[in-house]
Length: 290
Image (cartoon, rainbow, N blue to C red):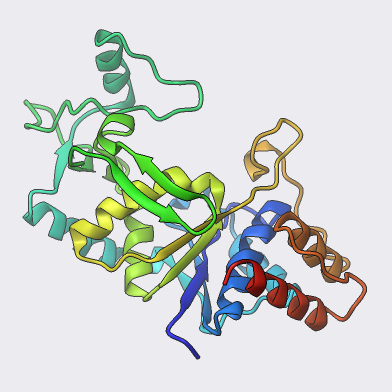
């Protein structure tokens, strides 16, 4: 077993669909191709969006596809003490601060600067509370983003650059409802679980610079990243539960794995035993992404 540790981290907002199987398979293939460990982490930090029983259904679907983790799954909702400790470390070093702004406050401030939120873009935080709450009550906690461009190299996408301060602003670490934000939770989880390689969908490329800033601020090691292709819905956008993605049809798991492999650019024999189909996929992945 190598020192490689990868993971698949689904949100239990419903069962897996075709797009999420592609992400799961890519991360599993990369781990197996490198002789490493593959973990599953249930990202249920956003409790209001979670569907009861979806976590168990996701684990059942993965097992049917032959994708079983090498250690018991972890749940984010059971790890909040780790996120709180990380937030406190950032506060102690002046890298986080309280924010009293509502979404409306931010939109009003942006309009006053002649700016509007892009249709599918970020609501860039204009730093209203960076120098103090000015009488407002703290609603959330934000990361103090440094100036400058974040550069990193993805194994598939290549060099990627983002000026986080200009394109995102100081982003939320803990929300007004007390829940920890995805950006903080995923960074703490990956570091605590010793994740060396992150393989996930290309829709998360723009999240990576924020996570790199947090990794550096907390003194964590940086994993290798590979952002794979997405399955698109009829509207041309990423297939998701929000745009009506149907639950994965696992009447024939081999066919589902073969279809997911095809999205990844891998041809396998769908009528072979599932173990053979997966072995073909691992060999093809090894040749493509050494």
